[in-house]
Length: 373
Image (cartoon, rainbow, N blue to C red; front, side, top):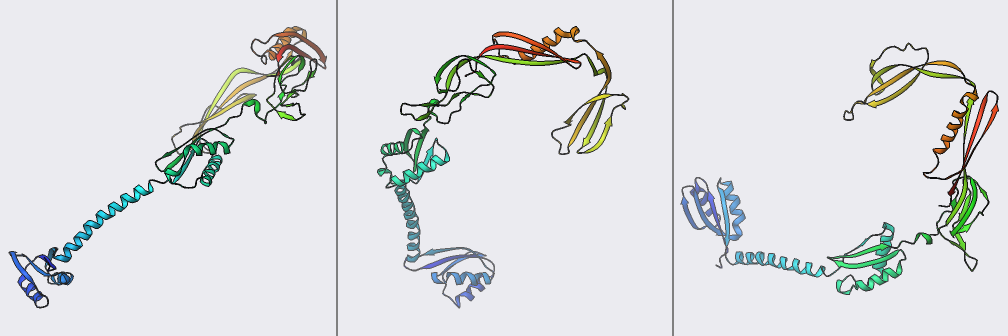
């Protein structure tokens, strides 16, 4: 067991000649001929590499090389126990580093607020050893430091310090960035019930669309201006108006009912197909639309369709007195389109004026409406 040798197993023809040549240079031990072209022998361990080269030069195939002796056993032991020692070291290192926090994660806030919280925790945490991190104390410190936090929870999960935050939301009434109440209508104020804010109008005032009704602040007992959300019930008589003109004599273009359709197919800006009759109308108006022929093709094919409507010009003589009620009704209907559902009408009136061949109907409806919402 103390002889450090290598057992070499070779394959090939004319082994005797090759072994005899080797034995003239190096010592060969325990030569055995297992088959006609298969044999094995032993050499000194230190000559293994040289023997292998010489055998290959002689045209023999080296099937295997095995070591034996004290040196080989020591080497194998070191290899075996070295692997075991490496595994032990890795386990010990993992156990050791698992006792530390290596990452801080903050949830529930913006990126800017997250970086501020992480910087504060890093500055106020003396050690990243898990046993030395007091999560309850850390919750109190962070909550007291930042006004935008309403609630907080801190926990160590794995090797991360997880900070879960909820942002504090100020009541809308305490928000300093409020807008005033502005009138969306023309009218006269009949009633005011101020809830919060500073009034800019009084009962009986005439207001126009865009006027400020209530400012978004109050003056406290010390004379300081403090922002608030303005709230008020402001009832006003709101005026709606509409104007219609009627010409006793006029020229109008009227569609006859005849039409022609032309279809064109384009590839990009290139016309590749056209279908439709020639236009033989004296006067006409057109209506055109385009649409893609397919959404899946790479080539931009699209259809352009043009509709030609024949029109004729007519002179119309229509005295105002013949259509007076229709013009007044049309002016009224134009106003009703803008009224809210179930809006109460207080008063309706209209005026008629005449100028150079046409009449003007001005219709006015008065309603009662809350303009302070």
